[in-house]
Amino acid sequence: MNIGVDAAALGMSHAVTAQSADVNSGYWNPAGLVHLEDNQLSLMHSSYFANIANYDYVAYAMPIDNQSAMGISLIRFGVDDILDTTQLIDDEGNINYDRIELFSTADYGVTFSYARQPTFLEGFSYGVNAKVIRRIIGDFANSWGFGFDAGIQYETNSWKFGLMARDITTTFNAWQIDEDKFQTIQDAIGGENQELPETTEITIPKLQLGISKTFIFNYDYSLETAIDLQMRFAENNDIISTSVVSINPSFGFEFGYLDMVYLRGGMGNFQNELQIDNTEHVSFQPSLGVGFKYQGIQVDYAFTDIGDQSVALYSNVFSLKLDFSIFRH
Image (tube, rainbow, N blue to C red; front, side):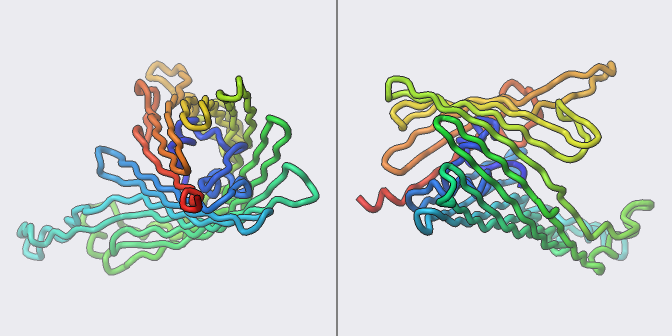
């Protein structure tokens, strides 16, 4: 749930909390769904670790009336066809390759979003997410989890402001472990796998604050600049880190021509890395992206690991967005 969706947003290094205003707002800031003028569908796929893992995303959103909208999205991150060698050696100590089976491990996240724009406060909107988390590790273990997000946006003139609070109630995952499966491997290696792991997993709240400004040049050209501050309430390697909160900034821009062709760039994931000589070095993750939109169809591409500046989970990302207005002409 932290990787991100939509190649357009990833090309701007996630700096979209303030200006997100389409079907993908269900992920970035549900308050942005109120800007939908018609139903929208979004799709994304990317592969990780030399195609070993796959990350897939689909989302659908629609306006309810002039002041409100709703959406639903599904994220899957999985590794399929993993070799289960726990039964490779039979009770007599013989190796039998016929005893090898295949299994998959996958995480699913389903998000239901609702957004509304109150009539008494112009330029302001708010939204909420209800999330269901499902995690499966073959027949060995599985879990269910639930959580909530909330977001707001405010727009005045060419300035936009956004605040996204993720997992505001703390997201809990409760695991169920197949004890019969566990016992088959419990004594396989001395000193390891002797006790059942913890069955409760929690995700603590996070905040993302964004500000963006749009510039228009000669009616045909536009430039949107944005900065986001991602705040986690734990001490880590972020560039700004205290015992109370850690802050990781991200910067992004989108240059547009005729609201048809887009060039994007950004920098994010600033980390203090400890070097072998005990000195600290600040690393960051740059990104680039391009997009093309024509009559309700938008295709975007992002390249998010440039020059090995960081150990990124993804590099080449493609996404497709379809506005249903294309069918109403």
